[in-house]
Image (cartoon, rainbow, N blue to C red; front, side, top):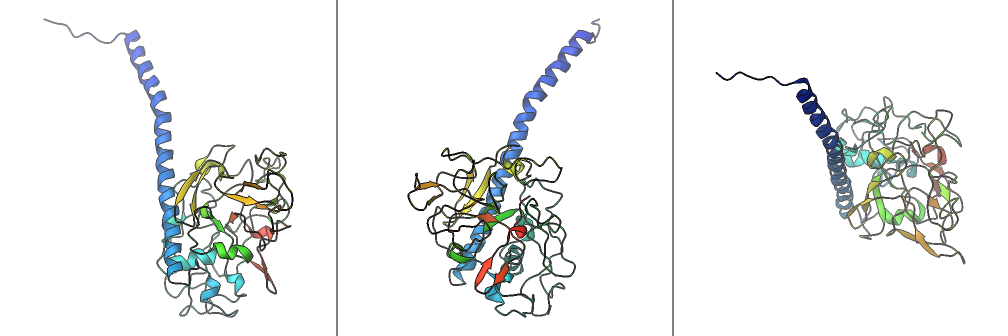
Length: 344
């Protein structure tokens, strides 16, 4: 009769070592697979939102959503603020949701890294929104937010204080993305131009070194190399919005930004750097080189005919993607002031 033989200690240890080795090999591969799946789903969401903007434009004189066009009076049923001031990021997203163009779910990236400040809005009010001036006539839910409410203002603060006065508005941001700031010359880009090199919407980005209010000349601080350096992490514990920005972890690493960017011809590209080679602008005067790669998150101040201040975003046409909480209105000049742009 054959006797059952048990594993020896050495054999058991060998089996455990083999299993541990296989787990060590497979876990990174599984992690990469999950990251790829998140990136693909996020790309689908970016494309879906851009497509919704294009459909909106087809019914609104080729222009993407602008709440001020819908409520063209200062004392409106939705909000009591200047017409251009209604064109903040929160209202833009909210108008699209209110009209069924997008859902609150796709406003949150599946790869969102800043889960403490970015949460889905599950209580969107599609009728009679309580945060509006006259709920029965309101055109969007003013409680929806596109930037977080918390943070500090000032030269070293990158999380804006949300100044909107809707009762009971959310504390966190209810969306993950940045978009073209539709003021001044950039207003023309906020439309269905079908230009394949006009970046209009996508994953938000970090802050770069040697920028003031997001304004800088090409290749800030690195001569003519064309390389952008992240703003150094803050030693005080308060986020700088640069090397310690959670936007780096959405798709990139701890020192590099990568993200999905939607263009005005409705294609989405996964960019591996903030200044893609296909997005360029022309520099002013006799600067050399004249045509250079455009940083999606910097308002370049050496653009020919562009802005001379990082605060003023009305003259430039170079790519500049940020979500912003409010608009400072002065006569016919509409500036998205520095403290109100979201940079986490």
